Image (cartoon, rainbow, N blue to C red):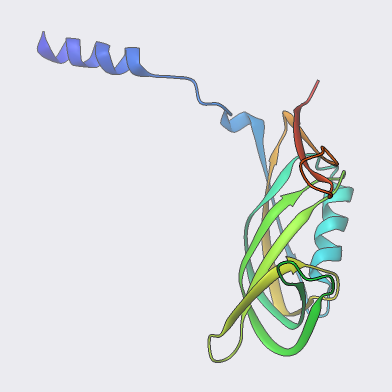
Amino acid sequence: MKYILILFLFAACKTKPAMQNDDVKTHAFRLKPGQDLKQEIQSYVQQHNIEAGWIVTCVGSVTQYHLRFANQPEGNKATGHFEIVSLVGTVSINGSHLHMSVSDSTGKTIGGHLLDSNLVYTTAEIIIGEGTQLIFTREKDGTTPWEELQVKPKQ
């Protein structure tokens, strides 16, 4: 009897998650040497009409990085061989916002806002999650001078 009561309590505590698995779609693709990381991600997003996506993971390397550091008006470039140690952000056909960190041969790591001209060295393996019940837009909302992420339910 005690076990039946425990089973009943577990069943009663079950709650519905905020976003169920069928509301999330997974995209996986690989970039090859010489391709531009940001341009290819945005191209993939456009081709697959992703309205609300996020970078799940990215591993790979670049021969050139082009990043804009915090509170700086211009980007910084460097050439060499760099490992992609992090790529994060939101992606949408309505605008994307990506940040990347790379490390050099000594492990020194640098990161910032991803710009064009981050050229793949050997590979970039990218996984994007897509919320199929959402739409991401980028709009000025008065909180900052920039167009910021707005999350809306799909009608």
